[in-house]
Image (tube, rainbow, N blue to C red; front, side, top):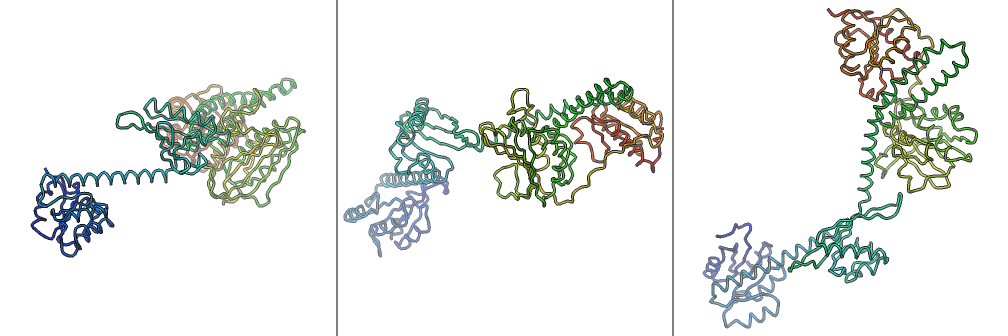
Length: 637
């Protein structure tokens, strides 16, 4: 059966006698695509136009140009195999054509059909194999010349048969200088022995092997993946070895960042849950202490003990905020701020925290760009970094705070995009951080301090804050010379926001009001209700959202104060139900959980733990804003 024309080889038959061409076409067309030409000039034009011609079959005696001369000219423009058709009297032309390299075979006239078929078939196979070999060589050359990997082919004894320039460069020599030699001629004895042992193992095993090797340490560490592919000969034994070396340093770094992100995500989820329970405890503790302190005003010792307990609880609240910022779930109160003002406002705080052995210096840029960030969290971050600097200077020293504007272009750091940044830098003159652990300082719970002297949350918290604010953190350190930490915050084009006014001192009830308190924690529920009662409000406390709906249906209230995270109906679900059925009724959500970040912006929120003044101020403000609306929600009916 004849093959499809698009996969059959192409044959060109040239003869000045049309009958001969018809005979050749009939003989070969079942296997090949046959083109014909009656004139040598026409044949040369067809050869130039048809690059796929595999075999040229030409008569010797033709007007204008003999067959041997035609095939010699064709050799200059094509690599097709050439067969000369000639009579016995033309054997001298065959010898001449062979000497000139114009033909690869000849057939005498009249021809034997089987012999001619076999001659054409052999010529076609030689042409096909030559093309395949040329293609493979071109592909191999392209791979070697343009691959980003270092590639080498070796014999079974480890001598280089072929290699690319990248591999030669790793050996410190040129490509030609490496051929026929082994790696022992270029590498140190220990490295050469390791490479040769790995080559022998791959050849002996007869299977592809992959190994990863690391060099250097710290920021200079590099990783290389080496793949060894045994190549078998016709007898089935391994005769060659392909070795591919790939730089996977960037991949390793990306994998490390991914593991870090996964770790932060998991620990962040844990931190959010812990913070919720801890904030409930702190709310009950701080509230109970605040309620109890006025009752022991005459007992100085007891008052001092209770005040100490309240201060310890406040430190616990600060730790909870740090946990939530580290988890990157806390709802930051970001606003456009003057960073110089934030740094200047920390004078008293730094003085009390760093002690007398540490000198604080400032170098603040007068034209510093504003940035959008949570100023309270930024203060906490700066304080944490200053304390780290103090701890790195046991004999005392200098902590220098500076600010500057900088424009980043072409950054190689994926966490630092191109753009304008305001930079706050904290530099100490301490012991510094060794390079081998410098890359780990942002890992959660990793600390360079002695056991019992650090939580490992500080730098992770700072890292989380900067990322949430669209910036990043950079750290540079030299052992014995100190450490410099730079906080990059994106420049804001908005005006600096005014500083929020502190809550009013007087939080007494502006008018009589009936308030529904909803919280599943009995201690928090009791503290909240007691605060409201102390302000002069009439309060009713229930333990669930379902119970709250029942109370609202039974009687009118002026305000609802509800916990966010409750079993069954959550505080947010309760707020939405109240908004649908009693749209004029003010609603205050209280939360000690990172879920506050998912509360719609049009809901009033108070974070736990809170003091009575903060609760009283929010309640008074909500009642005042609802004054124009109906004063109370009517029972459903």
